[in-house]
Amino acid sequence: MTETVLVLDFGSQYSQLIARRIRECNVYSQVVPFNTSAATIEAQKPRGIVLSGGPASVYEEGAPTIDTAIFDLGIPILGICYGMQIAVQALGGKVVRGSAREYGRAELRVVAENPLFADVKSPLKVWMSHGDKVAELPPGAVRVAETDNTEHAAIAIPARGFHGIQFHPEVVHTEQGAAILRNFCRGVCGCSGAWTMASFIAEAVADIQAKVGGEHVILGLSGGVDSSVAAALLHKALGPQLTCIFVDNGLLRKNEAAGVKKLFGDNFKMDLCFVDAADRFLDKLAGVEEPEAKRKAIGHEFVEVFADAARAIPDVQWLAQGTTYPDVIESVSINGNPSHMIKSHHNVGGLPKDLKFKLLEPLARLFKDEVREVGRQLGLPESVVMRQPFPGPGLGVRHLGAVTRKTLDILREADAIMVNEIKLAGLYYKTWQAFAIFLPVRSVGVMGDCRTYDHVIALRAVESTDGMTADWVDLPHELLQRISSRIINEVAGVNRVVYDITSKPPGTIEWE
Image (cartoon, rainbow, N blue to C red; front, side):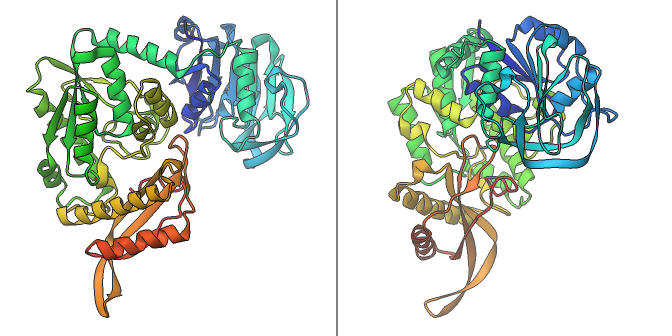
């Protein structure tokens, strides 16, 4: 049986990041709702439990609560921020609003020996994000670490196997955070650390086969990393029970349709159905400017096209998608938890309630870097595995304002130039994403001694590991100059190019 550490999600945007960090310790982790009962948890036989942070205060009316019986299961528990506070309150301690909030880096000093901090050098810089504090410890609790502003920055209740920390070890800003989580998983919970992506593949194949049985599955294949890995995984599990449907929605990059058909139809010998639906999508987008409305329109039409294509395939029961964790996190509250939606994704928030197929999402609990590793394990070429992310709605989300065929062509040509130059510079595989954006504005320019009034293209390049956060890339100025010059000279209708230097947060990777 797989050794598992469960993460109870109290609404933190970092709950899935906790799970990812635990998986980096070669321990399987799964996020479940904060109100999961102790009986349900006990039945899953986890080796450990993590209580996540959250935006609420434990003393507020309606704040997420916990089944206190979990503290009697004999399973080690780690409470992080709100997770520590909810445990303190439940076990007889007291949490109050602090006289001073603590956000950002703080110096943590370990004041008592504890397995959570084994081989962790003290003092260390940690990342804080809280306005409340523990005022009184529960019976049997001991103070383990402190900061200048937080007396109980880490605590333990040895008799209950509970450890609480007020800081966030899952974020990169916390020094030795990975070591602290590894100590919890390995030292406190006794996990062996034997879980790998190969383990995931074996479990996923068995799960897919058990769910699907002898029924037929269709998959939307875009050629991007997520859908390609999903196709390979599903093909391994189902073989001829899988039909991949490639939809040309008119929002693809230059020469993309031909490349996908050759790679998967000819080389991988998968059952591939090609659908030219460009006119359908572009008709639906006519005059639509608002980003969410565009995503919804593209998502709805995507499903409708699938329904039409499926009529030619006998006995289709399942629609598979390459949905990943960041898609789910940004689109909906995980399992109904109290987190905020950032934007809908065509394969998450845009699905209609009357979907005729059962939904299969074999990658929905993986981050992008994990998806890439699964692809390698399945034998996909590096050109596919390391392909830069491309949004499901395609160029529709990189085209601000109303989409037209003419302006799409402008964006497509500009994007092709940028990608080409990034590759020539040897930076394509070193950059998370690099792409062009069409802006719904015009600017005055001078070309050939004549006044121009043409469109503006924005360039964006970011670095990331999981898509949850991203920093802009300081591309060489000579490269930016070359890209700008080529776009202005080679793409009719453009007279100005700008470069985006916004990180995520506060921005998103895409512009809408």
